[in-house]
Length: 216
Image (tube, rainbow, N blue to C red; front, side, top):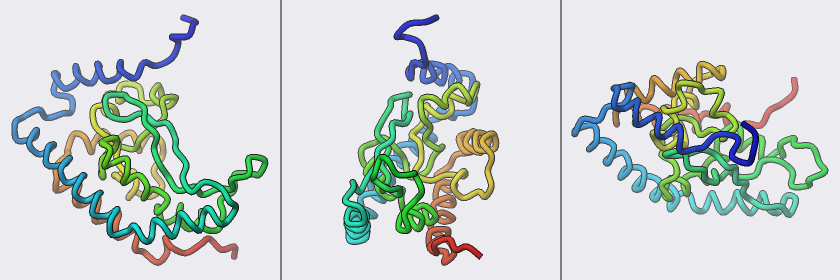
């Protein structure tokens, strides 16, 4: 049906997710699980605030370097689907040239930030604002929702994550990423979140991730 209402209503997947929880697919609504969800949010706030405070010199330095490199903005914001299907501006450090006429090849600094995933550190602000979680499914754009089919409910029933199974797994295809996120939601525990965060930290600290690409 044509018209300005054509497209996806972000509230529709949320309503479908409500039905999915009633059917027990794959969300656990027990009292203990609800308490764990509250603790997860509390940990998000404490860890995100602590990291922003501790890493503030690094964040400020990176922002200044990016702005001085070509006098462009330090951050970019992409509209993605979050909790209950609501769109939000997902923050990242800018990794490409600011010149609109230039190609979108990454700058030297941008390449390092992307390879090490440090370009995502501004998303700690999204976590504080309640738009994201430290660990969760990958945030997706509104246009991607139809590609997730019956699994759409899994993505809008929780907050998307700064990291997740999709981040610590190598060579993940689009369909496998969907599978990993749904499995995460089925098997979620606080212990699983800590395991994913530990693996993410190990990857960030790896020497290979911090080195720029070189042509052999």
